[in-house]
Length: 204
Image 1: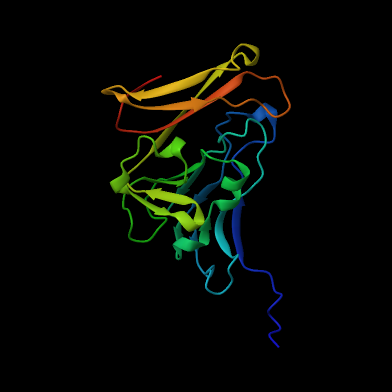
Image 2 (image 1 turned 120 degrees about the vertical axis):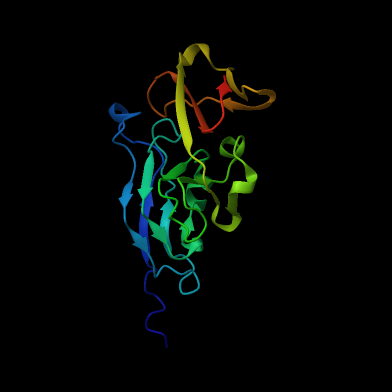
């Protein structure tokens, strides 16, 4: 009998995408900052639920991404040990992590890159040839790609049917349409979260 059969799988870090504290919304102090961290020994071949980096299913606040995480000199030895599926299943559809050194996945990039949840909201303006998708783990890694986020707020009572349209300034046919988010328990303004890669100009 295998005495390790019931042992818990190895877990690295788990992070959430939204802030539970209403007075810290849009704070520059949010998120997970990693500097020169290497994750190894989290192989799914050994334990199927083992993860080095996991997007948690907890969603608070506006239920849109604001915990802006940044990794510098961080590496993961097994790409399958990154798992964003729990968070995506809970409705986290606009989460990304800035990999400032492009070192997270060995040999994939050498410049600032982005790790992001698989979703149309984030994929709209990225260059597909720069991205590697891991569908089984619900994430995509885009090399030489950096995102910027802008939040628009409008009165909640006047914006029930509002949508926000974002277009490439040089190509008005290249657009995406975004729905707004309301705060889960406060009558705060409706938030429209725009996440776009750098290198292009946009109109909303």
